[in-house]
Length: 467
Ligand SMILES: [Zn+2]
Image (cartoon, rainbow, N blue to C red; front, side, top):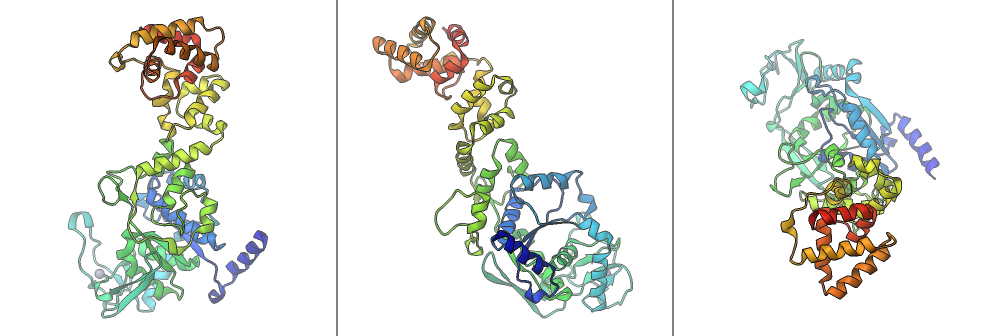
């Protein structure tokens, strides 16, 4: 079945008759200016799912024509991150390479010839120093200049609209409010407005998903699509993701927004992706856990939500917890090794024992050192944490442990419980004393299991230190 689909797809992709080309083709078109924003990951995911649900093509297009904003190595980093999430692309394009072929310049010239654009010789304005221009109509519109930058000639008195497939509604503008946007700069480089439209048409993109902040430029793009080709892609604007703290749109200045940072903090790509799936899209039932494959299967445009989703960090932790529980113990060991160099040096069976203890208890692997660092580093014990009777608890524990023949969990348990009963200690209080003495903390993995891993000698050493 799969084979049949891909053959059908190849035939469709190569046909030039667009009327029969019903295959869905989406694109993710980032500028390589740094790290991947959580909103960018969501755009890529939804574009991927929309294409793949319909056995279509997902295209990665690097929009790097703004040379001033380039960051060295950013394109490679971006590809690595997308691959980490399984968002693999069928086709790959780089705008700067396409720019060299003259494709954007000739499209702009074609618009001049057809009367939809004109050459402008005005001095380029520096928006930073002079403020953004609020002039809608350029003085060069009717001058018939033969060189300079190329600008869009917007006709007055018309209306332009499109059906937004994310919000399922028609959005309309009067052209009187749309400005004569620059398409080709005087240095021959295309602006975003031109490059994006030329590429979408040339690549037969059928559905465009983009951030809500691009909505003001949509009427410009709609005009350029219309003037350059017949098949305007369907467009959808994704909701803004809001910060749970400020209630405002996530901001890279205020909030953690970069995918790479979440991964460094110990979030699993599968968990982060699952969390992102439900930021603006909801299934028909209440299912929450989806692999990428499952998501592609159920994804449909009707699931897009109108309201702006809130980035709930606790929910992300919950997802990560679910995925950590599902990992094999080898994978847990591997993840902890990234967090703790002493763990990496430990014996393999010790690694496995520790991994088993923490797997059910951590939300992210970055919590490992706080939760289980005591296995490798002697803790500083704050004696004010101890409750009453702690000296008695400690002396009984030392005595029991010293006498124990076999260093075994059952033996340790039984021996300690016997003495707790005999002295009429409160069970919870007794073990809390041990916990604090051995780990320096009140919340840790189960203390008896931890002592077994630490070994008898080290356990006694720590108990003696605080007695
Ligand atoms: Zn001008």
